[in-house]
Length: 88
Image (cartoon, rainbow, N blue to C red; front, side):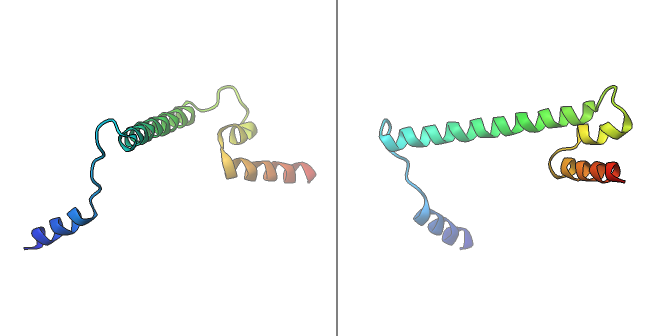
């Protein structure tokens, strides 16, 4: 009983497939390829960040290691801390 109701509700809101060769079909195909490309790019960037993070700095002093490996807010915070140390 529950499955029948659920299937009926799903079929009410299900998007019908566009006709082959129509502009809607071409748009749907384009959007699906674009989503795949976006996912692949995202995974590649994540992998690149992981590799960069795991490689670590080579030949840097301990004070410059923090600023060389951190990103975003951490880099900003380390720059502020370093500026505060210089002023003292």
